[in-house]
Length: 242
Ligand SMILES: [Zn+2]
Image (cartoon, rainbow, N blue to C red; front, side, top):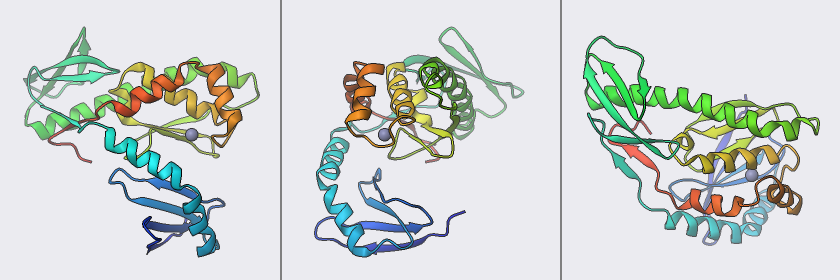
């Protein structure tokens, strides 16, 4: 595990939180609440860290502008008849009281049977159902796109599903592909884009010209998909644990 030391530094008009740990490179994140976070190796000098943040100023401004454009989240009800999306398609909650049963999707209706249908209980059932769906659909999408990368000698990364506030996915050098659970609610074209993006990192760890050439080859309309992903509202409900 990493030891980490937290500190808070103010740099001109770009304040950021610094987290030091046993890592090799500097990383900058814009969090969902628009704060900046820098992750740095234990020994990185403050001067290098400041220079790094300053060098990413353009990217920070673009990212903040994009976040400001995203519409407010859609708040969905957790009651009989409410519609919730699965890969962009609406499904309707069919809730009835009774002994607990695994939820079942029939056509566009999700049948949920639980003893107590209070919204908080429905939220728990729905959350674990989405996780199950995410595991199936995300793995299927990775398998669909992976043969190209297998031919180039890469090992298939293992899926980890996470609730993430500021990222759609990431690829770790330890062999994991991390995908944001929220993708299971967005249109399939967004999932396809994020999986392509993360798998292309098997070949190129950065977002340089080589990475973009590979993206153009794998998914020629990736820019339109990325734009869609960034302008869709996120889904939440009153009992959302996050
Ligand atoms: Zn990337």
